[in-house]
Image 1 (cartoon, rainbow, N blue to C red):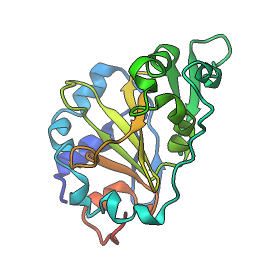
Image 2: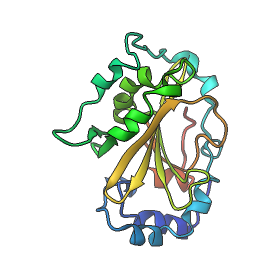
Image 3: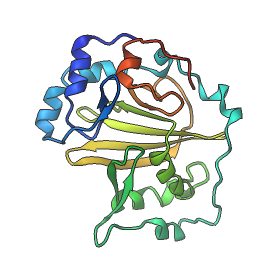
Image 4: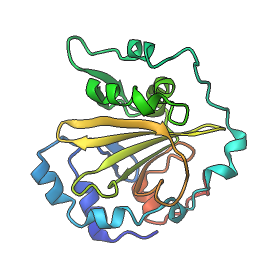
Length: 223
């Protein structure tokens, strides 16, 4: 897929927890205010969601899941004792995490509480027993996508994806002024073009920098 020079230029100028790269190295830029951020990426959101995984020549999960290990759920975790897994940072109201690039991010207690009760602890959601896999998905994701959530104007997210033999596990993080905040974690119920889309900023199989990949250099077919 070919990106216009203006889109690539805007991508390079983003000052946020999102990383960009040159031909040989990743860089992290300082955060600056939301007004500057949204001004710098003007025109980018419309393009992001058109960049679906098929345009990167990536395979569907169904085609390679047989080569992966199944997820190992701890059935002893319940809606009551899952609270013990939320390790607050000192006297704060959030839990701290780091991703594969050692970026710090947080999960607010209100978000954790919301996703570990009611319908979210039912078997078809199982968020309480999936929570221990958030750390692994952030530290060792198979794919990370940067995109614009549908029906959420002016917001952007980083989607961390971890493939298992029986499920696709997802952690969605919203980009805020001071960094990334975990908003939800879940098992993906389906894999369509709307699920994996945007800028592919992490590919575990082939670690080719994203700007090279998007510029249609010779890229081997990956998962």
